[in-house]
Image (tube, rainbow, N blue to C red; front, side, top):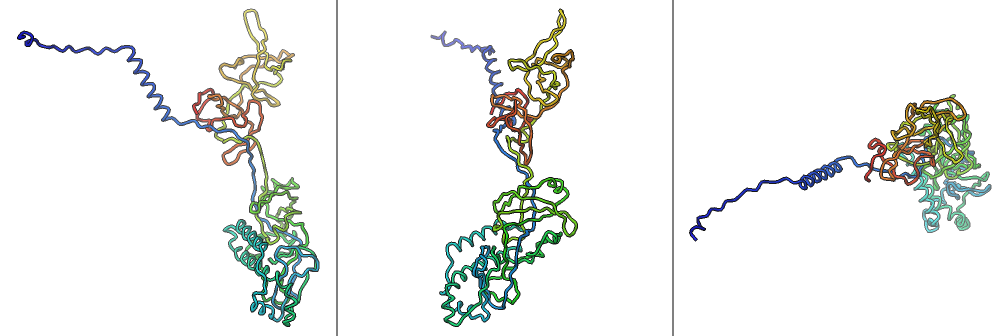
Length: 465
């Protein structure tokens, strides 16, 4: 027992042994960390799904409206009352307004408001439509038009309240000793109570001052107003034919001079239509455009100046972002060297030199694009036709050496998980997008996924979406 207690315990340190398994595990771990870090830090390749679209280019103008208009003046002095709402058609001989010379009618109706009819649902709908149309078309430059709009709305309310009742009350008013003179439309047409002093304007009168809206404000005389004899009380628009005249720059003249009709869009009224177009010379010697219409006169009856757009280009096709477009160099080969076999294959006759001499070998070749002069073929390293090779012209001893290249625009398709170049034929560009031709050989199709920014990748690169 004593001997055992005196024994010393000696700890032997084991040496660390590095085995192959640990080395492999460490390498894999480092690789995983590096790959994950690189993936998180690198820019992500985003894709875009090709869709159908169009680009419409428009030029905006402000023009003055010319119509066949007849201003009607008050035949007597007195208090005015209308029978027909603003912008409504009247037949020839229809009662349009009345004049109460004494003012007894106005006083009597004020003392007996129960005799006047209220606004109908139709009246309220017209007021809402007028208010909405005015609000949509108004902008900061035309702030002064608010006063015209206010007068127009007030006149409409007074008209509705008055003309719904006066005709029916004429008998009872006569019993009270109250009479008023009715006046009738001299011709059939559209009645408008907006008078601006340009009712007699013709193309011969057009000059730069015509388009100064501050000089040509409209005036509306509402029902119940006192008017003097000879005062303009309404105008009668007697034709559905109307025109817009607008200033033209030299660029506009070059753009439209050979056109006889133009596509016109009135954005605030959601109206698009065709108009006959011509160029006229104004009183001041300047050139002005003229658009003639045979429809929509009623929608613009109360307006003298109108904003509109002329559609100069409307292109449809495949819509892709501009930054998705890149370019690739291709060998160019004259089209007369192209060989078309009976089985439908196309390619070129390549000269092959061997110990036994020179022979001709047909090379089946993909034609990425073709115009009247050249075929465009792949120039990558694995192409069977390389720079310096000779090809022979069919039925001739003429030769052509492969070498010259030319760039073709295109995009990178990633449907298969790696980038594949697909050529595009550009039609139009605008606002960062491009419209390209549909159904082009070796081109993109609707719903294809393409690289959003072509500068981030190269052809044949694996893409992880």
